[in-house]
Image 1 (tube, rainbow, N blue to C red):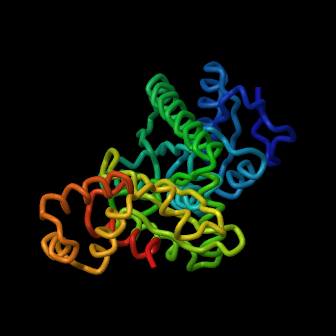
Image 2 (tube, one colour; image 1 turned 45 degrees about the vertical axis):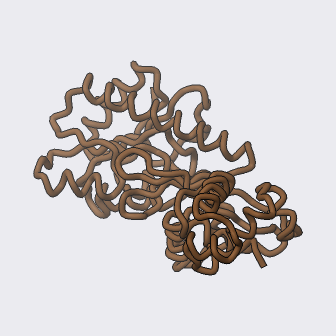
Image 3 (tube, rainbow, N blue to C red; image 1 turned 60 degrees about the vertical axis):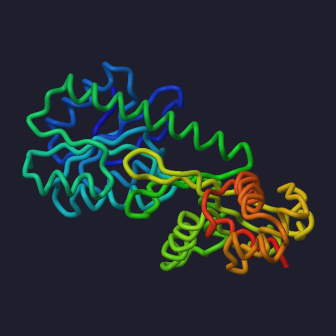
Length: 306
């Protein structure tokens, strides 16, 4: 059984057991939740305020957080915002616990990154069921992100407002290399990702590391968008990139005129082919480039064609 001491635990819990951090200034609530969590097979960390909670995060990143919204000093909402703003912690699901049941407080909890909201007095079986679901879903998402990283790519998910909902570790590394780590870096990254979302693809030079590519994979649930990040070698020239995409000479010509703003009928007249043939070439070009719109194809062509 854990203790509620002021100092963080000395040893990192075994990774096979889910670790839950409980943050509440009420000792009775801490003890009640700790007993219930231990009975469910969790390793439990406890904190009585925001400062202690951050000390626990320095010891080990938990699999979930049960967080009191109202505490002396910094409240739970600001702590949740900090957790979600820290890339290494942003995947951790935060469940708010509070006696506040007003709609604006509930909305604030979700707006700052919480995944659920339970009102005191707590119904322990309900809390355990909700927590288990969120921990399981977060672990599955984390494994998926890490699998993408192992494959040599990174993943970014944008919410319905275009903000980064989460990003895989590899994506975080590349975005920092591309846009820096200063206070404005996140805004620069967001603008670049928004371009990829809008046009289908975007790229940025990483110096000796090569060129970072972001490709929009489409819309997900709740208005979210997923982008796949990959790294192209620095010495990959135009001819090599065209060979990799496998455009035919005729398709390359059609794409080149499209990038210059010509309509399908203009391209047909210039290249001496029928309007239907141009449409067919563009269908193949769009498929090979992995895009669905003329603007996305034109944006890629601007980077690939001389």
